[in-house]
Image (tube, rainbow over all chains, first blue to last red; front, side, top):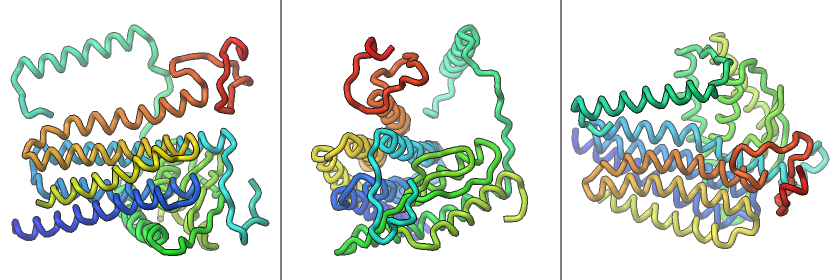
Length: 109
Length: 144
Length: 107
């Protein structure tokens, strides 16, 4: 049983590491601001959830798990709100997203 | 939260809660409109499970786009309808769009959102309409 | 052991984000990188707490998660309105461009 939990949390932590590093790489590799928003949301959602879940499995049924679930819940709510606020502020100040070449005609913005 | 439940510590907590409620009451800053929580309890659990699956799927898609050598990104900004009535359900819908990697709600208006997509394909609006119907089912308790 | 791997991975991610924070061409790239750095920092604090066998660190992580959100919103609000507090702009004269403006000139 302990072995099973250990294996599961290894998988979760390794997955979390993978997704956060991928988010960082995407933040560096993507060419413009609007695509970087999506790279951040990878490490915000998948990386964060996997890390929290892996730590929960290691903590067991204790007060620590309650705190971890609280952290995960808050970040689950505030993460997309902050991303939306940044995107909306950029749009309001006149930063327009580039539209792919084959989609130009049906762009009404 | 600290695991210490001696009467002194709990008393301090209760005292500070009472004092802050009293100060806020004196400041008169609580706005008068109450928002009733009208969400279907079974539907929202179903919706969360479904949303987790969607997050996993789109995470894998965006990860492929990041790690691919030629970066097949095809950005677009498009409009999607939202048929929810209450503000809470609209917030759930907009946050769900932003939470799934690859799509971000950029601007919200009364009955439609502007959504920015990273790898736009022609069936993306249909997928968002599906999510819209599911949030509407959470709001009203009807069939998803 | 697994928390050591997690801490190293988070550290690599934090370095990548910091490079973008330093080199970001626009203001919003930097705000975005700062927000993402906060997210990784919260996880890093939690993992370090488990690594050193003191999960009390999670209290700090919880506080950091809340302050990170409020800080991001405050920075965005400051660059949009050039004021953090309850400054009342006239409704039709809200400055939308982030160029520096003297509030006395507008109001």
